[in-house]
Image (cartoon, rainbow over all chains, first blue to last red; front, top):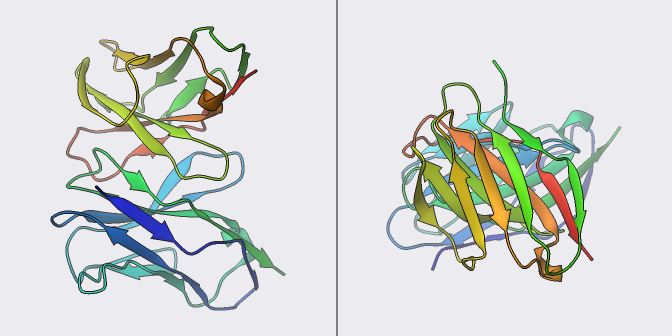
Length: 112
Length: 113
């Protein structure tokens, strides 16, 4: 079956530090990959996506590249801000976003 | 544009009872998916509805059922509640089943005692 493994949190960084959150997946075929973000008290928001190998998704300074050879989709940001503090979820779907399989989430706290 | 809304915000039920959770889709969306998010875990797919028909189901027992109405709003019903059903229930809508982006509501927190 499909599964997503994320690095365990929580992650605490100082403002302007570099962020990497690791994500690897197991899936049959060629899934689409997603990063979602959940701010306190809010619903999940799609942060970025990649639908085929070597695609790079990017949004709000965050990036992730679909690496089929390593079955990975690591999230990166060059300089985090306090406002980036949230829980980040890596997810996959077999095609479109019909049935998302999520990782367990990584709590990020950015200190001023 | 109104986003996805869910009601109630919080709910406390007793084991064995039944519960109904409600979701209003974002305007223009005809597809609704439901997810269960246990504390400290990622959401798990329960099922999806498209044009009032179930359009895919995750690994949940039949006591989890749903409805979608002509205005594309949706209900999640859970019968014979168990303690492990305590979770945040998320509703997500999308333009159609092939859309890559799902828009999530804030969720309903269900506590079963």
